[in-house]
Amino acid sequence: MLDLIWLIPALPLAGAVVNLFFPGPARAGRRLGKAAGWLATALVALGFVLAVAVLLDLLSLPAEERVHVANLFDWISVGTLSVDVALRADPLSITMALVVTGVGSLIHLYAVGYMEHDPRFGTFFAYLNLFVFFMLMLVLADNYLLLYLGWEGVGLCSYLLIGFWYERPLASSAAKKAFVTTRIGDAAMLLGIVLIWLHLGTLDFGAVFGERASDLTQGAATAISLLLLAGAIGKSAQLPLHVWLPDAMEGPTPVSALIHAATMVTAGVYLVVRSHVLFELSGTALTVVLVVGLVSALYAALASIGQFDLKRALAYSTMSQIGFMFFAAGMRFYTGAMLLLVCHAFYKALLFLTAGNVLHGLHDETDMRRMGGLREQMPVSATWFAIGALSLAGIPPLAGFFAKDQIVGFAATSHRELAWVLASIGAFLSALYIARPLFLTFFGRRRGEERAHEAPGLMQAPLAVLAFLTVAGGLVLGLTAEGGRLAAFLEPVVGPIEHGEAALSEGALVAISVVLAVAAVAVAFWIWASGRVDWEAFPERQPELAGWLANAFYVNALYGWLVQHPGKGFGRALTVVDQRVIDGAVNEVGDEVVDASGVAPRIQRGFVRSYALAFLLGAVALLLFLGLRA
Image (cartoon, rainbow, N blue to C red; front, side):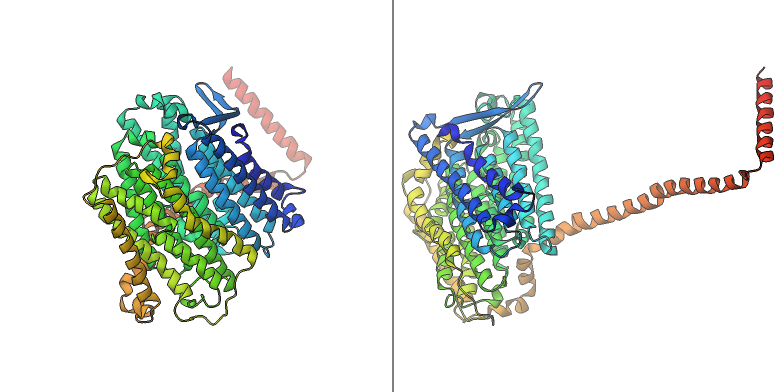
């Protein structure tokens, strides 16, 4: 099966082509009807089956031999640059492929029910399949250039899907914002890839991470790593390139789930983990990864607490969780970052799709101030959301507990006491910000007038699977010594876990983590569900603090002041130059030509004597000229 790894991305690509172009452009989806969704879902699910088969083949090999590269064909051969279309099957790439296809197929299945009345049903699934294809190319690529192709494809598909309802101004604006913001990081990443080729003469992972890595100077390694990190920051919505992520919630909810759980925002984490050999050559780069992740986690946690839009609150929670992954990678705890990535995919997809149930039941209402008490009308959805929220909060034995607890504990055992304290605060805020939408949406008194209805069975089935994975995922992947089964599987790629002894015992660290999580959930219940606190009056009592939290510390406004307004002013200045100088000069020439052409009718009157006189004058002038020359 290892040689058939190319089929994993080829299947969703085939689905995209069929839904877009067969039997005619933009018409196949309408002709296929609901079959377009089933076809797209089946092909991604079949890709998951193939990924499982590849996983089993890898597991049958000795740990040190679990790498297989399938060279499909030569792509570029110019001078010393030689790049193949080659796919890499190793523990890291297959872990990502399983997440993308497994969670992605469940999101596809959910979307069949969620989007069934959309007039562009087939087109939506074509874009969704294309999104999965590019993400699979990204994680399975065996060289940086092919990875970058998938990277840019993911950005393109995010633009198409976030702006899928382009007739809505907010959706169209959000799509452009996501595309432009991520381009900043992508440009830096491309420069990093160029530097890799200039310094090492190759872009193949095997060569870059092998003996050639030692040829890099520390300065070159730092420059390359920081440029790659800039790309990761943009794609994974970390500070300061995070501003596109909350606005991306204007897209359909299945798109939000796919972006946050299985594709786009996890790409940055994968890039850092895949390139860990380069990052470890530069202590500066790893420190920047750690700081960016920790600051982003804390910033997004506070911003999430200030949101009343359900999907935006979940968006900031994603940014915070991705921050923890970067934090782990910055400590060289790559297996911890990957465990959180996998577990986060389970419970974040569960949370977003359950939010989709709420929107479906309330006719697209997203303001949590108009919800409350929905557990009585939507008991199944309330159960799913509670499982996902408690997992993210870090309540044992759910998946989030094993993933996040390992990262926070690792900070203590690696002698980073300040980082451990800040990470513990972040863990407390994580539990607080996710318990808040749970209680505002499903508990307390009913604050809306519209009666909600439960989602149909087709939309509930994938949620049941995700809920099971959220409950069992941590137990299966993380409940063993030295990081769990996933850590042991990834060790040949990222190396063994290295940490020291903490001042506190492992049991004490776990106890502190659990107490913080339970305390945060209790505080959230007391504030937003007990009825003892008038939380609705908080914006009036503390308008400045409420404004800072609701507007995510006004980073968008700051960017508008620093970038948008000067850019508009510069554009207006260029408009003046264009209209008055450039166009003015062109128009002046045109006016002179028009004026000159007005003289011609006065000369050309059609009389033979006039032509004879002109001929005579011309002949005299010519004779004078020749005479003077002689």
